[in-house]
Image (cartoon, rainbow, N blue to C red; front, side):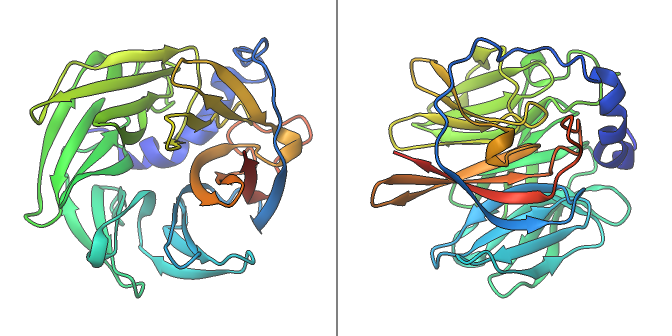
Length: 312
């Protein structure tokens, strides 16, 4: 089994010489329609904000990966530690009256799913001995959730009630094309219109998995040549994706038209994830960043932030 500490911790430091400043400019010809942006909250540089979840009361939860901390941030940008583990936390998903599920590792760097209640109490729920890099998580149905494993190259399905886990889909499209390259493969995962979408960051693809009578079909390539970490959908099926080392946010329409809507000047250096909240004029897109700590901008590593983008 791979050393999870390497998978989840050290890979960021070996990522830089892999690409260096010769990062292929895959978005050179992509149209830009920059939207209004503001900083909601800031964290010290090298705080790896990995994922975020909006709450019905207007607050949000944000995972700080290496700290193993879940922060709560209110609408004024005031933040407080809500929960913490001795390991690391990566993905987060709401789990109805039970609270939330988190993917990550325990103190021994073993793959773990945690249950976090609404008062901030957190405990291990499901251990996955064969898991290698548990990343994005999304609810499938009721107690069932899907988890992207970035290094095993598969999608796990877990049942939070029975505490059972099994591989739901394993396919070459979910894997790393080069196992010597530590960049994650299957990364973000979302369900839209009964189709499962996954970003494969290393292969710079967005994948789709149709589901027929509860059974997953073979993964298909939805879009290539896009470097996406995590992402979200609006009601019309537009996808908003964080490009991470490309320091930008993309909008991708159902017809696969790609537009850049925010870049470094808007504060999204090292963008890792995004999520939408409806407002009176359209949507507010909340973006988590790590300040470019994987591949710093020429101006250097910035504060990690929660950025708001106004989408009309």
